[in-house]
Length: 150
Image (cartoon, rainbow, N blue to C red; front, side):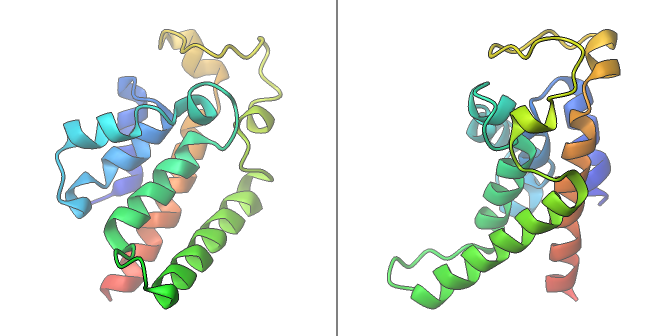
């Protein structure tokens, strides 16, 4: 499956950036798309529209945790490995886009950033670069999962 295309399609359907990425990998997490959409629903717009960490990035982090995370609270080695992988993903994203912060990623928008979601219109998609961030996050995770599977 092309998870990058799936994430892009999810975003174009109207899902927020976190939902778009997280839901794209629902089959890998053994959860329904509906469950994935609900879990990630709070993380769009840099976490509830606060413009903090990009939702595409948090969606990627959550999906990786659901697929490859540790579950034993005493698994210090697993926790250490998980955190290292998340930092690696963050660096890859920053190499592409300079930052993880939503507000900084969107600083060049021609309009003021709103905290509440905006209707998804043709105009919205023309000025929002978010689909690019969704694609990058999904690509990073897709490439990692391919390495694990091979």
